Length: 464
Image (cartoon, rainbow, N blue to C red; front, side):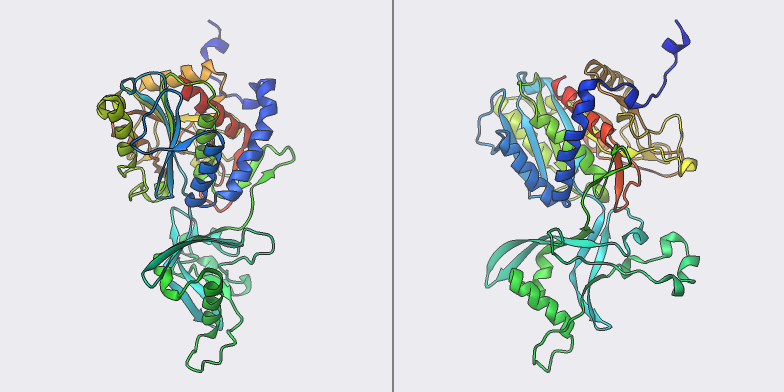
């Protein structure tokens, strides 16, 4: 055999694109950009996915329903997670094809007693969510999103809050220090430039026109007057609210060639969106039941009732199996899972933290990642050689442009995904996702080619 046959060469995806795929990339990217602009929180993402699924004939599942091959169903977990399924031809005893991703992203959460006045201005106290570089959230426009459960005389009324996403809406900001007075600040480590306790969101300046002489915080009162008029809120209702600040900009093309998308929240909506769209695009009944499981709380450890470690997935699959008379454990051990999460893309601006031979590259396709973790692969499932071979065969057979990836140099850092939680259920699991530049920043960048190949790759997996 020749060296060309024996050697492995991680080529650019553009060298391997078919003309058919080339013309599909841009239209697919436009749909994804629209999704990102709508789905800046996990609740917004679930609502949009329900709309997309119902437009494709999916219906809400309950455990009294009889399921048949070809049925399309979805199940929502408390408005913050969703499972979409297409029932396959084969028994669940032969397993399912599961793509699992997360819908949450790093952000700034509003506390339960947030509103205060200082220096003649009103602010919210906040608590950052997920792994962020805190200084990146200073001096950028932010919008408020979330829900408030207003409690009034024993009645509970849930209201959606979106301020800053519509034309003409105000924005919000966490202020930064001017360089003229920042000599002490700029001598600090970047981890100390701003403390979490100081990420206070600027809200208002103009005081209330009330003639109530007992009120000393009239700017704070003006904020509450606005919130009461718009949403019926009193200050106590912050205790039953989930509000957050997210970047107030839309997804956009990056580069002269428009080959990249810049946006907030690629991690992990750049995987959850193609995992969902590939399932929605299934026209024929697949051999195995195909499922997209999209969850919350990955950025803070996957704990909690809406995280991957909750029993939501187990209960849903047990319902499916019970209707067919199949023990769930048999289904688990026969299943395959793609843990659909992003990895870092090699960045020539920071080559010292990457390993050129093994890190994924933007524009080289969907990344198949055998292991993640840190400190000697801690916190990973480390997929078997047999599963890696199976996925290679599936992707190659469907002309999916793909590559392998990892998370930077050994001992440089590391991170985890939901893979180990699925693998712990005795499901063969491997990570697969889109490489990201500037991961966890308020503005991340991905390649459109990689996004489309994720959609194509998940589709091939569901049909395998």
